[in-house]
Length: 219
Ligand SMILES: C[S@@+](CC[C@H](N)C(=O)[O-])C[C@H]1O[C@@H](n2cnc3c(N)ncnc32)[C@H](O)[C@@H]1O
Image (cartoon, rainbow, N blue to C red):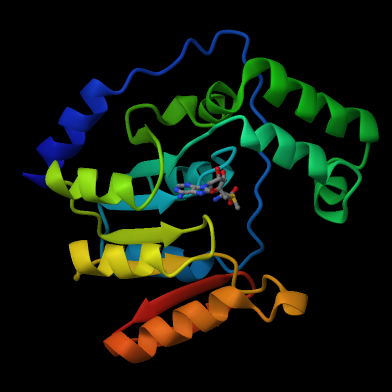
């Protein structure tokens, strides 16, 4: 049932032409993702739902690390990402990955000219058989996926640091493991994701494990 819902969704999504599209394997996450790997392995997860994919670098990591895992990724991949990349030029995180400013500018240029969606998909094109990109916004897309019979085993939240993704994911898929990023973001803002995750865990009776940027909820 679930397998066929994935296959049906996959058959309805058209990938853009990726000929000559340059991928940029740049992740915004900050470590600790092995906590999610452990859940995937322990539970023999078949389907991970990622909310917020950016350049699909974290997506690529899940697919590369777990050879039988299918992934559905939700992201608008809209032009806002061009502006987002432009803000990273010269900043420490992008500079660590691409020390050369010219390379950083080429990244921005490619995202601008190729557009965010094809650039992101180029990064995971070898996993086309196991990855379905859903262009749009959570939580609306979560309801649509549920309606279509999609049942993720693990949900990885890495989008806008709001409680909605946790609440709606739990409401729709109470047995799924809920995990995510942004645990370490941002000290000056009082770590908003920690507050959201702790409040959710207390309300619904979960334990929180966290390391670096990654958090997971356990029963
Ligand atoms: C921090 S980035 C994701 C990083 C990615 N997971 C990685 O590790 O490389 C956040 C992404 O969330 C997306 N986003 C923002 N609001 C969203 C929403 N409501 N639903 C889905 N994606 C959203 C943005 O377009 C952006 O690509």
